[in-house]
Length: 280
Image (cartoon, rainbow, N blue to C red; front, side):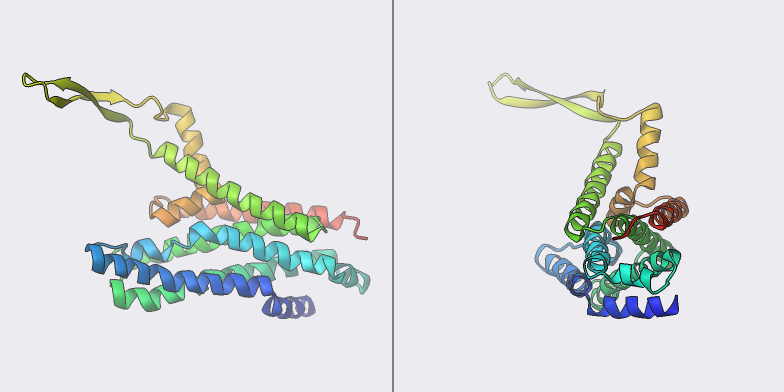
């Protein structure tokens, strides 16, 4: 296992996909607080450090889909995985080694955003206004969410030897999770009632806007349907992305459990299927 890990980390260090994703996260971590500070100077208001610190969560799924699919896909296209099996490495170790390396890469990508935001954001925007234990809890949720993405993308990449197809599938999956999370969040965020208005004319013939009593919102989710949407928002990595990026996480412990469940389930299925896969 140690030899597989050393080879994997060396491969990751030289991987163009990882390098591009890493520097993109650094750039995002530098640009976000600077842009917020410019808004603060020009308009008198800007996003606090609380809002910026987890802004990367909206993009980490896409970055990981590119990194994991190309990293593992290259091992297939170069014949590395087949050679590892030929020389006697157990398939379990091969799968776990790639999962560990990709997971380490995911943590590094998270840190590549967090560290620049802290170094630049604190002097420009001030320190966190939320309690530090909450910051650490949300940070843990964000890392576990990233690892859940890694487990899903590793599952797809280890079972599909076609690098181009794997990249397409993983990238589309990342966008699907993000769009699904955004949609679910918007549905749950809809108000239960809304104010109605109608136009009328006064005695002088001018148009007047009159306010009506509050009316029930027909798109507001109720009952079992709302509970299903709430579960999906917490369970799906895309739902967690939106909650973290918008700073609306209410149950960090539950979100962490869901991510751990995805990691264990996806990894277990991936190992089981990879053990029986015919590698040519």
